[in-house]
Length: 256
Image 1 (cartoon, rainbow, N blue to C red):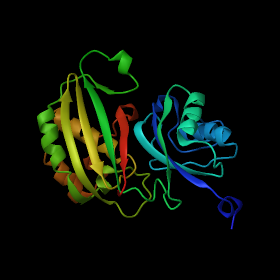
Image 2: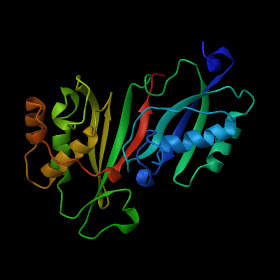
Image 3: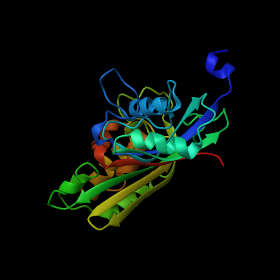
Image 4: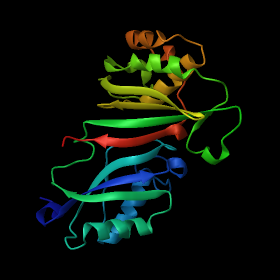
């Protein structure tokens, strides 16, 4: 038995929000490449006074944001109150990362393995002029889009399907069947939001869904293109990968 499990410990679950524009994604990488996980681990380790390993629910890519990333870590520090721990970590973090909550959970809880689903939101800014103040938060599409066509097409993604045609060539998992519980398209002023909730997602799957819906919204394809992608499982039938800055991990779902 290793040292950290041989002594009393707490399992701390964090809900983390961040602007991913300055980071090379969530997951810790080679030395010198700044990631969200590495920054939070470094700060949390200083607060609890021992090295910390964060287990994150989602490996968001470079430039992708989060409002509700979930992560957990084990600590042998038994005396620091949870709210005091949260505040101490937040006070040492850069302005583009925050800890929204900290809770003590059962030792068996693991942010990734216990997750039963995730919700993502993608923001498209539709206007001929560039939204400078939102440059790191939205995908600027200067041509017009038909949100009604996009909404009709998105409904065809709901259900259990093989999403091989909407993932990346870098996807290494053999099982590409996933269940989409919700795929909504809505207008918000100059923005179109695509919200996707599912039991799991493949590499670049949400961004490829958005890229395909954009092609349908601008009139290149009909809504039936979704059926073709799902039936052929061929990535060449789908749209381009939408850029990362419009994507936000909204929340991670768990059993109550």
